[in-house]
Amino acid sequence: MDKHKLIVDSVVVRFGSKTVLSGGYITSETGMVTGLLGRNGAGKSCMFRALMGGLKVDNVMVSIDGLPLDRQVIGKSVKYLPQGRLLPDGIKLRKAFELYDVSYWSFVNSFPKYSRFHDSNIWELSGGEARLAELYMVLFSEARFYILDEPFAQIDPISIGAVQHLIRERSRDHGIIVTDHNYDAISSITDNLFVISDGYTSPVHCRDDLVRHGYLR
Amino acid sequence: MSVKERIYLTWSYGKVQFLVGAVYNIMCAHLLAMSFFYPILVDAFILKALVYVITFYLVKQLRDRDSVIFYINLGLSIKKLQLSILLIDFLSLAVLLAAVVLLHG
Image 1 (tube, rainbow over the protein chains, first blue to last red):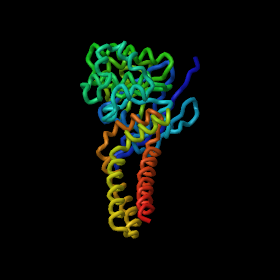
Image 2: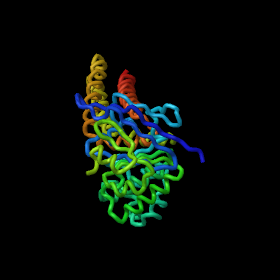
Image 3: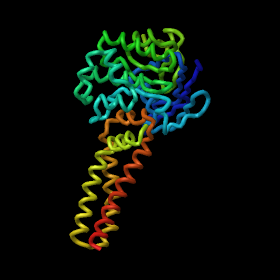
Image 4: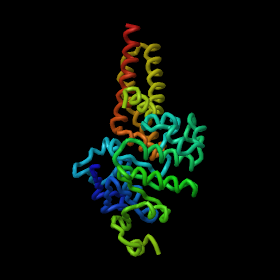
């Protein structure tokens, strides 16, 4: 299988006079899970939203296999699960899966309780139930790279194992970037780690790097 | 993505703007049909631009910021979606007013 590489570089995000990111950088390769860590407000979600075009940025460079990516249609190559609610109000779960070209019944095979939500609106599901459905929908839609912003948030401990399994399964032929505050859940599935602090991204080689960047004590 | 899906997504993204626009367009057509005062045609489009800008601003402020990712993930450009809404909205006003003018000749 061919390897593909996504590079997000030189991300600069400012809100008024406050600079959130001065040198955001992250890479992802197919066949690997990359973790991004950082304290609250460090700029993790900003970097992803800057990449996807959901946020006005001062600068961002995105390329796949060395070729610049047109951010106007980035969704064809990179799918993003944001921290908040992905599904707009009024779109039923079945319809959303259909638009993302993902089989709802395959999802039900993995998570049988969702058979009764087939015709439900997203607001009829609990936060955790909605999160799991959105995560599956994004992860099994067509793309080369996936970015999962806090995929374990609101998900019960039993389902976290299933989510980790899904991420590992999909990472065999896709590149996945994951960020979460559940350090144990992240570190057990990632192949490489980055940390954001003071507006810059740095690679993490050992636990001491996280202590040095103020993420762990 | 099929044309049907694209139309559905454009409607889903811009339904508030479409509904506000439709109410405004019908009001303008009704006013023109009642008054036959053709100079209001220019005012109708100037006011339309103002209503569009205000609706656009309010929708942008009130929309859940993450829900736009739903459309971006599908490979849609938010700028193009917004442009489609603008074109459809203004065209429907133009068609409606032209129909009133033609019918009342």
